[in-house]
Image 1 (tube, rainbow, N blue to C red):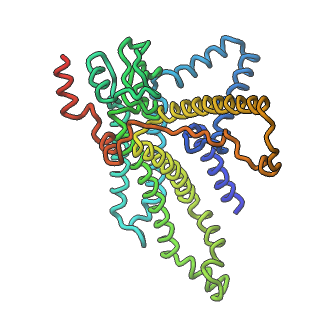
Image 2: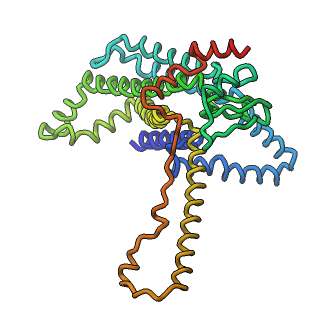
Image 3: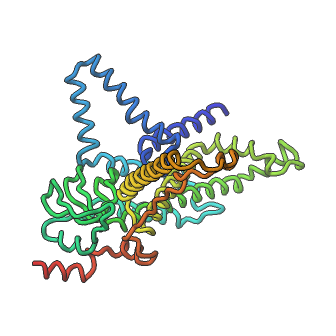
Length: 393
């Protein structure tokens, strides 16, 4: 029993560390222990590691480590793409090796041997489609069309030139320092795809997230049905009830013993099911976050821009309100003495700073259906965009 629980604990700790390292910067983990573990693994521990390397091996070795970091984090590279292929291949291998022997089973049919392979193949296809598709590169030939498609709101976007590409910078675009190109409707650079997520491939990225969530859900349920079938086929509940614990015990009373038996006999399947469930929940949260962005016609890049703008406007208005309150106080001192008001009323009087509200005015949010259509059918894929491009020539 101790060995089985040790394996479970090891699997959970490993999953937490891996998820924290790879996904700790996701917005859904902001302010959580996952983000703190990620910060320690990528900054705290790494800083101590660099100091150790510099002290023991010298500055040349530390420069070599920094060069590797630059290649892995600041330049296009297929490292995370390879890791994705390894993860999905190894996971499918262990699922097939540990579960296919019991398929077909009492609760699951033999067709799942083939549908599982088909589901993984579609997932890899969506991965390749997102990785190698054009995210919406802005160049001298199409920049005028993108400027027409995405007008400046003069709030978080104003007319300016890209200092690197030396072309006008359309609204909602950004120059990606990793890919070294301007991307229309830039959302973020995805290391897993080794590609930017922008105007043209957001739809593929959303399909990738949704499909992989469904794969994890499918795998978790399928393995659960395999284990439930083994319990039924081997009559484990009947044996525990009739032979060892008496007929007066209910299934809930026997649950700890059933779990113990499963951990002892099918620990690999249990670990796979837990792993798929955890990854599935992460993908569900990430897909939900990006769905909200699509519905409101906002990008991840714009989320940070709006946060900075709203914070700046709030501080500006607070300064104006404070200046006005100070002016009124000074005027009150020089004016005739007013009858004293109740101290309790003055104590509970609402501060004028509490009335400072900054409203987000997103001019690109044109309603649910229009916003979804913009993701599914981006401007550059429409006939009107192509015609404008031909006219501009």
